[in-house]
Length: 330
Image 1 (cartoon, helix red, strand yellow):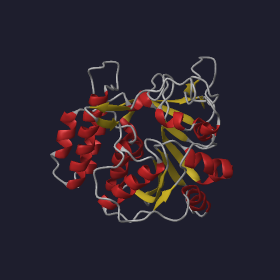
Image 2: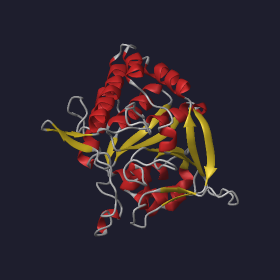
Image 3: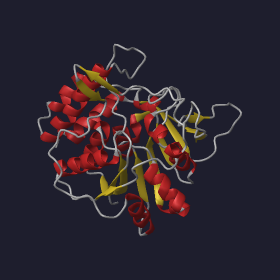
């Protein structure tokens, strides 16, 4: 049996870079392409960061530039006025800090993105595929939403979609919504309603296990450039959220990090990293109110699950750490 064929859709900041590194070094995947979208940062930054990571890894993987804005969200005047948006930026001692640096601490890219648009690539790749392809969405799903909107029948060529997005009982970007789904609610709803099997990793799962500088040190001790860079991303992220006063759990004095996007990759390698997953009825609010972008799971006991959405809730930290150490020991 050959390697699993994947397309990775990213908005490369910190954890997206980690996900690309893990996917590439695992040896488990035939990465057909990496598509960039706006999200953590503007498209020009997420694209350049993606190219930097691919160059750092020495890979011959095509990178495609995608959508620079949400499908329709920003077209509605006043739509975002009622949002209680978490502050991800702060000025400290005259230095402007953002939860994600504009550019990763890697050499400027010397490789170029493909001329073809990301959405066009996704459609063409699926159209021509002789075997089904797995899509991995770890940014706002604008590129995938556009592809599904343009040609819904492409689901016949999709094996499954692995999604980092939403929060059932948790939120971060607003009081109701997680970052990826909030940045394009309409595309998120299109993705969840697509007639294909999906595995969703909301904040409930990704924040169920957190990582400290201790784990970062163990990874750095592997002593190769990839592990050392991965570790530096972790420690820098911890320092940054500490400076910004952000916590990934209810204790505001805890600044350990969630490595959200990485779990989508690790799940495909070892599904047993998930301790709890349920088939759920899922929708995303796109009404434009205070819950814009919220993942809504119908938990009523008398409503039977329908559709193809499977939601992860809890992860196995020991198994995740063992898997990371094995992959990064190259």
